[in-house]
Image (cartoon, rainbow, N blue to C red; front, side):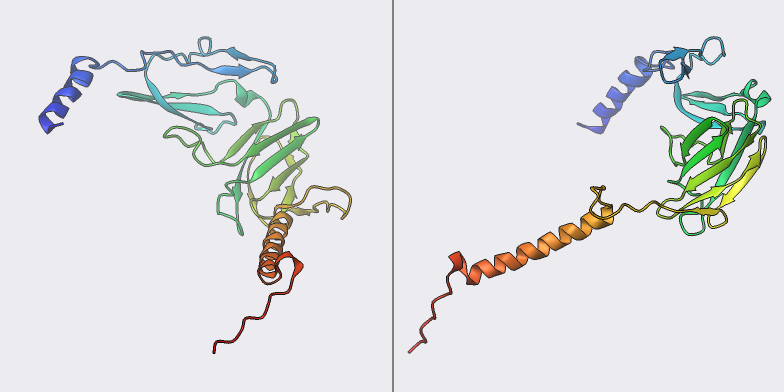
Length: 235
């Protein structure tokens, strides 16, 4: 295909046909409300989030730092839209960042478990949450009716678990690896049918490979259990 033909096809499928319109058909955005894990309810219309622009990414963070999660939506050929949460800040919340000292600096990959009264919620600190999008590394967690956190357990990537707290509500904290209370890991008794750890499985596989190599070498010189016949010397 020549350069002239390629340019003509590009003009037909973009300028002539598409113009300023979107290939996605100007579909309205939706916001789904989780009903306790039973079902989802679409609430984009009553909350004013049903924009007809062409969104290509969304990120969540506490942009106005009032204790709840807001959204920013990036649109194709249109300005980005910032949606501020004006409801959640009236309820108890807590926010924190992780700082790794032995793992990566931001604690990416860590699992965070928050316990506040009867509430128990978990988060995984991640990087890259969607198409051309990145959520804030600060974890903002609603506490329901609890006015404080009993403890925060952090399971650092590749390292031990630690517990922090208690903490009051409506504060922002930085949890530093190595400054919490160590959490003892339960050891599985031998011979009790416990699941093998990844390290144990690797060692077992290496042992099987070594045993297989030894048996293969033994079979070459002792085929069928017979000693090899001596080779006569050359005259």
